[in-house]
Length: 408
Image 1 (cartoon, one colour):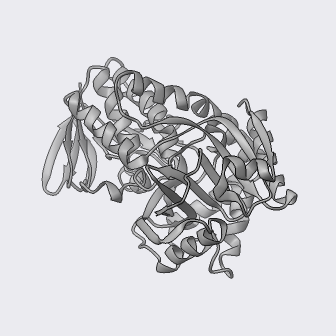
Image 2: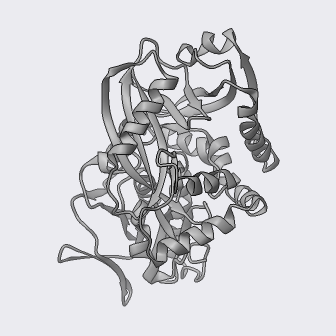
């Protein structure tokens, strides 16, 4: 079975790895050979299934609405609107009701429960994921700031995830995370993992290429269509024919997938990150909920990331957002050497209007999707890659079902 995968991020490469391990002949295509252009590259590197929640939530909706008059908001609404963006916002608002959000959380929890095991499967086969076990610590000043955090953990526990928390008060917090010395207490979540996203991308690509996968970069795909018993990828004047194709193009998924019945809107949730030298690195992942600043060890440096700016995938970087990230990070991490800022990154995460990944067969036989993961593409990419690959491989033996979750 010859399969084409469009997209060379963690989601696409994980799908390709499982496909070739299942016996398929696989080609990965992507519009660029620059890993920095991928959402996976600038990811915070948190593998924290308990925090991989659907993004349509009342708090995020309120923050986006606030951005209309608060230009420095961490969560912002689009700068311009078309019919697809307006439809996304309407569906996002509807899905932010607590009952709907809880239903989405319960539906996605099985993916979260399998996320780390999917990494372990890659690692047992020799893939260099860079994953290491580490705690996830939220640092706070006022007890009222913890209300939302504990409410989230309670919802996650209700949905079926085991929560192991430890309260770190005063000196206990700074003893384990000296960089959080300005905060009064912390909440530590055990049993989580972190990765080095750029090296994870590199490890996955080397792994698929070692298994015989062809990786063709600098190919911008214009169209995917069914032609008789073949699926054709058309890009830059060339035609590539396959038995099946997986569209894993992140925030740009809708352009290629919509003609095949994928009606759920997907927009770009732009994020920003950078790295900086610190006198002593974090033990694990250090998160500042009030400021929405996430930090993670990135080798001997600290990666700092934030912001969720909803917009069209072709929107550009905002200088004010880079400045906001730097300014806010300086207030919570005063011990970092801010003269050494490097690895500035800006990229589009794919956000679906209900916060759930779009997985599986489309209305067109042989065309599949794997996308819409929001900020959780690195966390969930290995498990959704495994599931979608299994669906593709089984379609080689039976006709793919029509009207699946991807199209609904």
